[in-house]
Length: 259
Ligand SMILES: C[S@@+](CC[C@H](N)C(=O)[O-])C[C@H]1O[C@@H](n2cnc3c(N)ncnc32)[C@H](O)[C@@H]1O
Image (cartoon, rainbow, N blue to C red; front, side, top):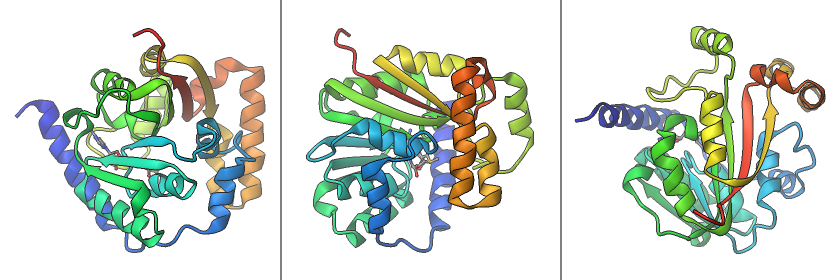
């Protein structure tokens, strides 16, 4: 067994264990859907920017790569899309299936338990692909070309990933156990990783999140998220070099018109 294959086995065991900690799956409330329909605070919340970037979802074919418990797949389907969710963890996929059943959108969703590198999708299949906190678990050089090939011409990819562009920050994050998933394969993406991702696509748009917003969970109120989000958005607009210290990136890009 190759080193990567044995890591993959560890990742499956880890993610199955994470799934076992989820005890309740509930119906998605209307106010959550309304939030992703309007995306009013996209500058403070990366997930709102993701939904905003996808545009009108009605009848769109979307791949949710690394769908986990199916939260995003379910929201996309409730907003009118046809969704394929894939995850390497069979237990995560079980939860995703339960979630869409509870929400009554089984007919607009399909879930696959498998490694994306071993489950090739047909070329030119999807209008859009979303990757929410998953590319930092995989070998980008293997996975990105597969994902891009499965997009229809002009199709869009939206990625939300943790980053650490400064090696000092990377080392600090490695030392502090807070918020770590302990996945055997994950890491924070560095600048080269993000350049590679952007190089696979065209019409790239990039936005950075999570400098002072790291403090928002301490206060819990939505106002704190908006306040720190506004500071983070303003700071990077004036001082782009500060991206070294931000913790999250959203990359949006289209399938290149020439391969
Ligand atoms: C941090 S979780 C994010 C889950 C989901 N996108 C969300 O936001 O809730 C990363 C997910 O990627 C999945 N994953 C990791 N490597 C994978 C691979 N090679 N193929 C498919 N899924 C993978 C993991 O099982 C895990 O559920």
